[in-house]
Image (cartoon, rainbow, N blue to C red):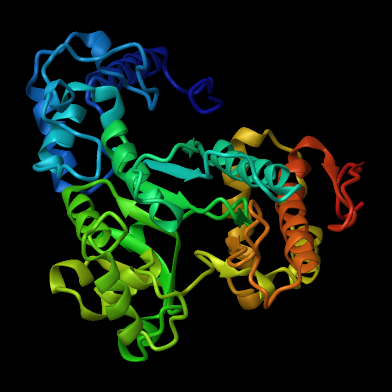
Length: 437
């Protein structure tokens, strides 16, 4: 501005310069305005990109195309979709065909949901229909659910809690698969269904699933290939937490998987075969975890090549070891905050992901002293109370309490409070510039 306003420049030069700048700015605004009518598709999925191309060719009313990430919850296309097909079924006994195309067509007719669809996650969890026999079971399940709701709110993820048995024969650990299938059909706008068992606690509220790592895969599970394929250990993976792509492959795979369960006439035979294959298996029935291990160890390439065994972080982790680490982990995270003033800045919960990314630069090499993403209380049975006899009941309940308090502390920080001890339910206000203060 000082140079343009200098007295040794002619008024003619100033006038021409202003005209040039005005023209350039107008052209820029025109280009920006034209681009704003095109729905952004940040993904690289060619299938969803084809949806974008089709949308551009349609003569849709302008109010049906959004230029933001907002989803139009008041609009449902009058065009016929798979929902109008009387043969379409949500149940496990009727296979779904051509799902990828059906889902693509639905997104085409609902453009406000198409943008960002390739990264959209739906967390699904649940429990049994009846009240818990364990006197503190219902309270624990409430706290477990609150933990998941907190994480989903922070990361803008939708969540479903189911407590209905959708298939009369598929109970216990098999009960989740009818729920997952129904969720896929009910939510064509999501790319991933993230099942998390009711007894699993998200203990790093900032961590985000590295979806780019899974571009070529349809099922993500915590496990070790050597233990499953070579040593044939049924504990080489855990089926209580998994990420499944909303696609035809997943529906077909669940049909094969469920055929080893209690709804199958071969259920007993599968129990015998799994016992013979996995020598460390102690439950004679065919359970979903050992069935999955069998399909990975012995299954066809069309299944195994699309399954990713995640071992680089605690996609879910065994609680016995992790529950002892929380205080030491907290000490190291507090040390980082004392060094990095930006991490101590108060902020709205809506922008918490910004501070999670900032913190990641300082904790990504912490190794075992990183916050475990998920602490899974396998064997504790918080609802019925029939915990594995290898554990003491108090170890289970106290471990759950500590894990839930550890996670809740991360949430409470944004609200200006913290628990000084993981063994105490009492909270205290935190001073400005905590923990440096």
